[in-house]
Structures are given as C-alpha cells and as structure tokens.
Image (tube, rainbow, N blue to C red; front, side):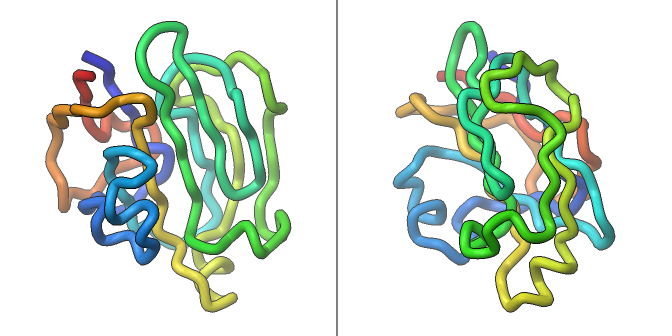
Length: 149
C-alpha cells in the first residue's frame, strides 16, 4: 500500500471532475483531483522518490518501489510557459514526500481563464484500489489517498 500526500491545499474531488478528457477518463491513469484554495502556495512531493520529470506546471515523482505519481497544476497551464510558477528543485533530484517542489498561485491561473484544478495521477497502475475521503478539505502534505497496485 502506497500513501499519496496531497500536493496542494484545497477540496478533494473525483478525477472525473477535471475539465480535461485525458485526466477525466483515466487515460493517463487513476487518480484524484484537488480544487486548490486561494493564495500562492507550494506544491509538495506526493511520495518519496526521484523527480523524473519537472516542469513549471507539472512534475512526476517515481518511487524506489511501486508506481510513479504525476502532479499536474491546472489545466492548459503548459501554455503559460512557466509564468506564475517557480521551481524549487531540479529534475532528477531525490525528494522526500511533503517536500516543496513548485510554488504557484491558483488564483493567477484562474485569472488567465484556465482551471487551477490539480490532478494527482498514479502511473503504471492498471488496477488501483483507492482508500480515502473525497470531498474533504485537505492541506498540502496531508494523506490524500492510499493506493494498492
């Protein structure tokens, strides 16, 4: 069983609520979404591992054992070309669960006409079993869900 921490603070919801069919239909993998709270905040590593991919709007942490976890900050935020995001670590850095990875401002993302919803997706896991409470308020670094792949 792998515990996945919430990368941001906000209201947890089903990944099907993400306004992007790639995430909403589970094409990338199973997961959970978070409607982030207001104000600038840090996005933290959801698991301990290595940052195998790091972009201003998204990052992928792959654990030493088990699946990787993708964090995507907002929808269509790749088009922002890093505006409003600050990287705190570098690609390939080792990272502990709960460590700050990126700072961003969900309100700024929303002001550009994009959704600030955050997708937290488990990769390389065809049959995930989630244990967690959707619809609850979560804080960055809280356990968001556990998954058994």
